[in-house]
Length: 251
Image (tube, rainbow, N blue to C red):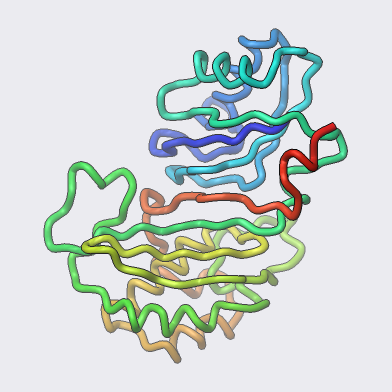
């Protein structure tokens, strides 16, 4: 089965299960156990980091339960905490893998760009008081599109990371009043890649880095070279894209 999830990641140590730490995966598996009576392990399409949010995370699991899909939605939401919710449930064929089957992931990084901080937005947007030049940020963004070695934008690379090559399909920065949004769509991402990109783009927007300097960081391919790493609060997984519809992936 597949769950379409939404969550506020503020108080969680990321999605992935960790011993004695609150995680999104831990809460989902606890809710599934209470609903079905089964000990179930779930898999996420994108393992969001500590403090990162999701508007449309995709999670899969196997179960022997015959509960109808609407009962899974209402039942899981009954047991889940208020900052995690199931939006939709789909039964899909057993061969489907939410991670390997994904064509791309889309993340947004939100920046509150005004002099005063916002008590209402601080959980979901990074406050930058200096005026950001969106045109300069977009000039830097253009070099991200295509297939590149993004090692310079990664931190805490795991030993199992076979390659730091990734393909970026779209990358741009827009402004709506005092809210600046960095949007990026890619095949997948390295650890902290989007937050390091956001940190470097903020420097470009503040006039502290040129587009050529930004490109040089990308081309260097040296882990940890970019940054500073932007805070997790501004990052949100917006959607995971698949080549087939959920109806096509049903049993």
